[in-house]
Image (tube, rainbow over the protein chains, first blue to last red):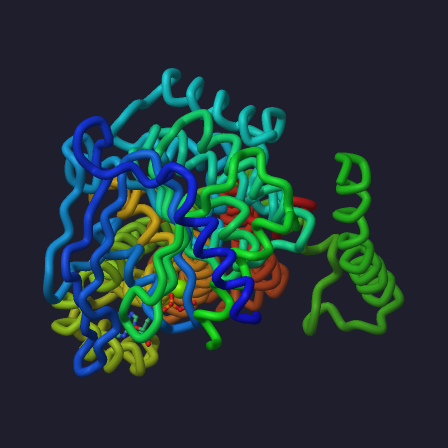
Length: 265
Length: 258
Ligand SMILES: Nc1ncnc2c1ncn2[C@@H]1O[C@H](COP(=O)(O)OP(=O)(O)OP(=O)(O)O)[C@@H](O)[C@H]1O
Ligand SMILES: [Mg+2]
């Protein structure tokens, strides 16, 4: 992309009131990485990551395959520990218990009905009829109200991911970490799922961290896009575009260009 | 599949056996098949009736079934417990698996002379052999089942806060169940086979003993009857296992249109 449009983006980003609230007075912090590094043996995957995310923000993480995006999410979810630096969670995120993880695969239990799978998301939070009622409610929200008692194996790929989303959301997480959850879906189902995700995020206002390969998806959904390259944050870009966003609009296309330049420039 | 069409599918399986029996009866009546080689089905049915009336048949079936079940319970539960332990604990597997794999390579029927020396022809001999025969299929398949549980599902369970107990009962055991059923059905076959051999060689009651007695008195109809009853009992055990399988693996795509 030519330099002219880059400048255009920059001025656009800097001009309006900052979307990212300074984390101080009213803005609570969801989590912060401070100089976080992660090594596997001799291989340094992440190196000095600083990332401060206020509660309720939608962050997209982009980077080439193998750059450490999943590793970053696993650290956030407490599945792994950093080898250096520290990760602090906001006051209300108490431990990792209110962090939920959505995987690239649905990872549904094939031997449990759809509603029982959603109830897995309430482990340690609710049980019995209360759990079932809450699971049914959220199944309604993801558009599968009448599939509650079926086996996962009869659902389509997109429907399975909806169930996985319902399972992640049913416990009202503070932080939702999504590791390319839509990567395996066809283009149309994907857009549908993006809209669903945005709608639920707007309603529940959790902090979302979405890892994706799809730059268009990132700018369509996120408040902020973080590009990781060679273990560091190479770009940290706000997306100050009002919602609902129109896919393919000039604004989004410009931001997309900036990100692609950084990835391949 | 509807109930009716299922019945039809089952009925097809019975056509061949019925034809064979009819042909056999005809051959015997026509004198093509001498009665001292293979008695006619009607003769076998007569033997069945005779032994049922005298109570001998029921008693022997009871004795054999009790032996089979006792051996199965002992060997099966030890195999299941060890399979679970070795599937879940690296330490336990390291300690015992190599030894068990070595023992597994001895055909258990090769131990018969030794077992007779140890236990004579007492009940323990049969119990020991059946338990040993049943042990390995259950052990191997339980271990295999647990090792083949999808690690991604286990990770999912952990992320969603399941404790070890919940993880075992909701993720690991159901995931291992299809393999465990394979082991169960296989071990039921071994159970009858072992019992037949053991009872034929050394026993003073049971179906195998009945058959050996009949051979001494040249009662070939009783010999054939015993063989048929073994076949029926084996089939019955297998059907029960399949029913259990169907009931507990309803989620499995392989069982959804059966
Ligand atoms: N448990 C582990 N042990 C050793 N190396 C690991 C481990 N997990 C990740 N890695 C290495 O860390 C690097 C980053 O992996 P990661 O899965 O985070 O990449 P990614 O950005 O998510 O890639 P993709 O987009 O393909 O999913 C890779 O080189 C990978 O081999
Ligand atoms: Mg990844």
